[in-house]
Image (cartoon, rainbow, N blue to C red):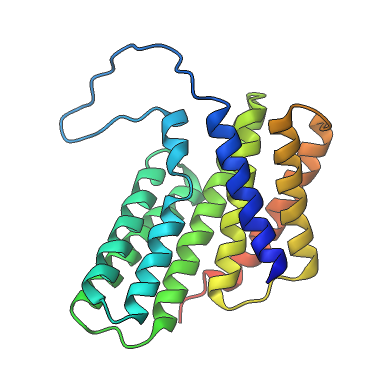
Length: 226
């Protein structure tokens, strides 16, 4: 449990550091959103990086407290965040995010109707949502690395590690020592990137490669639907 708390705390610190370090805006040009849509700049969207976890956690807690209306609403909010992330995702990550968003929405409706009896169904659904977010942040971290945008790489691999840890925890699986080490190393590399010293491109590549293997290894178990 101590290791889990350390991962969560470091991710939170990295998120705060990355946001406060980039508060200045590039320019004030106006971009008109199409009817029915909202446009948010990516640097602004990063402020909401932890929000899906917040709402999914609150939804689970409210269900356990028998506040079904609030539980359903929180899970629906989590689903909306996943749908928003899916809008900038491609391939497997996009598919996972869309499927998880739909699954969360269906779960929210079932909870509101009183047809969900066990928290285990919620845990499995939330675990898959966290896993989808982990895959997504890993994939966009790879894209940022190709563009040599290492600040974004650091922010995204820290998010991917965080959500992988959450996915394993909520699935009821104990993260292996090797997996915990890989997640901690990824967060350590991210922190060095934000500090602006002590990291190399090769180190980033190694850390991302190892993190990718752990994500893939966890996927077969977490994505299994009974």
